Image (cartoon, rainbow, N blue to C red; front, side, top):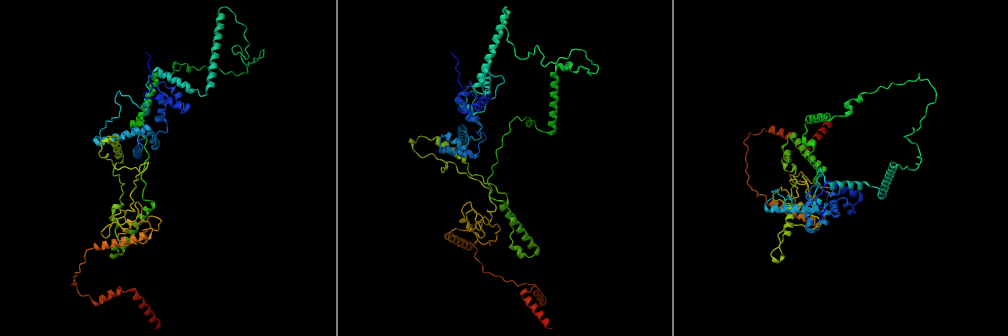
Length: 534
C-alpha cells in the first residue's frame, strides 16, 4: 500500500524563509505556485501562515488594557464575527480569539477562586497535536536535515534564483543541449580514430592558435650586437617562502592557541569593565519597551506660574507686616502654608472597578445560559455599555490643584458651616469645567480664606433666569449660615483697672504724639500766616 502524505504540521524556519521569498517573487495571489515549493504544506496553509504570522503588518506586542476593553465590547455587540472585529482592533482574527478565550479563562478562575494557579488549561500536553500551527512561532531547523527537506531547499533555491522568466530558461536549455552535442561528436571522433578510420579535413580555425604561436611576437634582427652596456639585474632567489611552515600553512595547534589568547584578552576586558556575562552574551532577546502613555495634565504652565506668584506675594506681604511691628495687619493676613493637603503631589485616581473582568464575566455568563424554556429570571449581569460600537474611553486626568482650592472647589456639595469648602456658584457650573472670569480663561481665586473676594465678575449664567436662580441660592446659603451661628449672650462685665492714675501731662504728651494729620495741617498753615504778618 503506498504511503499517504498528509500535508500540515508545525512550521519550520526553512519553510518560513522559503514562503517569504516566494511571496516576494510571486505575490499574494498565486498560492498554488507558492505551495509547490513546500512539499509538506498546502496552498491554504501557506496563505493562512502568511496572513496569521509572517505578514509584517501583524502586531505581535502585548495586549494593552484599551485593546482588551475594545475586544470584549465588540465581542458583546458582534459575537463570533472575528473577521469583522480584528481590523477594528488592529490584530488578526486568531489573536483576537486566543485573547478572548484567555480573558474568559481568567474570569472563570477568579470566580472559582483559582486566580493564582499557573496551570493553563489551553496549553498543549505532551503528545497532543496543535490544531492551529499557522499562528505559532517557527521551530528551528535541525542540524541533520532529511533528504526530502534538503531536496526541497535546493529546488526552491534554483526556482527562486530564476528571475528572468521563461526566455532565460530556454536559453539555458539550448546551451546545455549544444554542450551535449559537442561532447557526443568529440567522443565519436575519438572512437573512429581508435578504429583506424581517419576523419575528414579539419576546418581552418580562425584567429590565433595560442598553443602553437606567440601572439604579437617581435623577433630580434639577425646578426651580432654588443651587450656590454646593458644593465642586467641579478635574480636573487627568495628562499624565505620555500620554508616548510610557509608551504604547509598555519597549523591547527597554532590557530587554536591564537584563539585562546583572544578569549583571555576578552575576559580581561570584561572584568575591567565589570559587565555581567548575560549582558555580553545576550542570551535572551531584549524586550521592546512600549511607549509610555500618561494622562493629559489639567494644570498648565501658566496656572503653575500663577500659584507660585500668589504664594510668593503672600509671603512678601507677611514679611512686610512683620517688619512694621503692627499686629493688626498680621492678623488680617492668612497663613496659606499650613494647608499642605492641596500642595502635595496629587495622585491620579485609580479606577474603582475592573471593567475588563466585568465584561469577561458577562460574556461567560451569556455563553453558559440554559434554555429559555425553563423560565425563571434572566442571567444576572454587571452594568454594561451598549451606547456605541466602541467602549467609552475613561480618561483619568491629573487633579488640578488650582481648581481644588480649600474654599473654591467643584465637589458639587454645599457646606452648611460658615467658611465652608464650596461656594453656591459650583451648583450652576457644569461638571468638568471651571468657573470662568471674563469668559476668557479659567482663573479661579485661590487666596480666599477670609471670603472677601467679589462674586459679581464670575460668569454664573448665560440667561437672566440662571442669574436669578444664583441670587436665590446665594441668599438661601447666607440665611442658613447666619442661622447656624450661636445665639448671642448679652452679658457684659466691666472691670475697673487697678493701675495708678496717669499724669495729665503725660496723657497730654501721648495725645499730642498721635495728633491727627488733618488737624496738624490747618494749624501749621495758620502759624505761617501769623509769622508773615509779624
